[in-house]
Length: 246
Image (tube, rainbow, N blue to C red; front, side, top):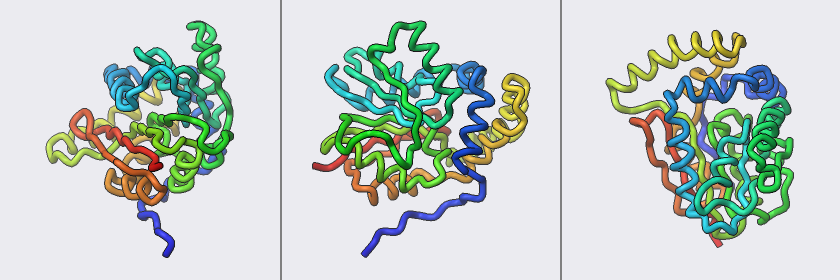
């Protein structure tokens, strides 16, 4: 019997060309806005995600939906860090910003960037030791297809770490967080990025995305085991960890 992925609100268009165009438009100010809108906590989230992989210094890591490569750089810079990182994203302007950062920090020999789609990852089966995604799975049109592709490219026993926004369940904080997402974040985002749609899309996409339980179910149906969903920052972000079975 074929497993059926859980259904969640997919009313927000996530057509690849639309999402790629939106991120291309905000690429020059993307890092600034990430740090500004999170109060700098985004760095701590990425450190936590990389630590969950328990790297030994020998691994090849795929950073999917790499954007400007902050998580790829964190994987490479960890002590011990990945021996090699491949960052994949479909937004060309984001990759150009990422490449400039790699050139500046002399990381081109350790991190490679590839333009590609999360639902058709341009890598061989069982070719990486770990996969990371930071705030990108929410923007994929077909989440189940992306999770199946991740399972395909990671080696048996390999690890997965996904950071993604979530809707907090704590009543008081949920209200404060919702007010911030609806009223403050879009205004700051528009002012800094000079893009009308991107930072209206962000809170809407968070609200419409799968709950932690739903994403855990998708990962399980894709073949992952030892799955955990750990809430961070009072549940406004979730760190999903999993392992591909042997």
